[in-house]
Length: 326
Figure 1 (cartoon, rainbow, N blue to C red):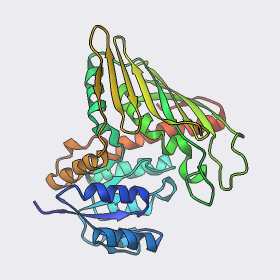
Figure 2: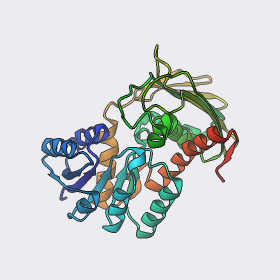
Figure 3: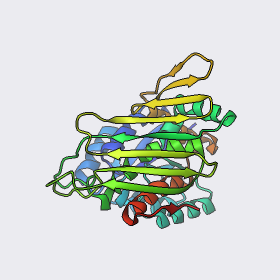
Figure 4: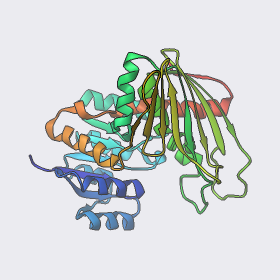
C-alpha cells in the first residue's frame, strides 16, 4: 500500500513524541508541519524531512491523507476546521479542548461527513487495560480510585500552569485516568469535585488547582474517586485501583502495568508497553489506509465524552455543586 501522508499541526513536545512513534510505523510519512512558532515547526520539519506550512488551513489543502492535531487545550479550532473543510481523517491529542460545545460541533460534523477520527487516549491500546475490560464484562466494576500526582510546575509564562489555557491538571493530565475509568466502568452520569487552593504561592502565571478530588457516578451504579495534585513534591505518580466483587485491578505508573488479584487464583502481572504511542499511531494509520476504523479504540466523538467529565469537574469546583452529564 502507498504510505499515509500526514500533516502535523503543532511542533511541541507531544508532536515530537508522535514523530518518533510514527518513525516506527512503516506506512506513515510526515510530509508537512505547522506551528505558531516557526522555529519549532522548522526544527521538527528538518527532523522528519517535511515541509513547513504557514497555517493549518494551508496544510489542510496540501494533499494530505490525514492530519495529526497536537495542540494545547486552548489552541483548538482552526486545525479541526482544516480537517473538516478538506475531508481529512484526523487524530487529536487529549484533551480535545476547553469548550465542550465546540467539541460536540466537531464530532457532529465529522460524523455527518463520515470522517475517520481518533483521540489520543493511548492507554486503551495496552494489554493490561484490554485484559481488565474483558474480565469486567463477566463481573462489573463497583469502585475505583486513583489519580495523577506530581510536583509544582515552574513559572515563566508556559501555558500549562494557567488553568484558562490548560483546563488545569485534572483536565490536562488526569484525563488519561478518567478515560481508563470510563472505558472500564461505562458512561458517567454525575460528577462532584472539590479543590485545594492557596498552597502554591508567588508563582507567576499560576492559576490551576493545587489539588483536586473528583467523585464520578456511573450509569451502572459504580463510583470512582480520582485525584490530582501539583503539590506532591516529595513523590508522585500515576495509579488506578479498580474493584469488582471477586477481582482487584491495580494499575501503576505511566505505563499502566497491572497487578491482577482474583479470589482463589494466583496473582497475575501484566507489564505496560513502553512504545504505546507507536501502537496507537499504527492503529490510526492502518485505519486510514484500509478505510476500516475497527482498530481505533477511541474516536473523536468518544474522546469528547471523556473531556466532558473533566470539564464537569471544573464546573463543580467553581460552583460547589454536582454536575449532571445526562
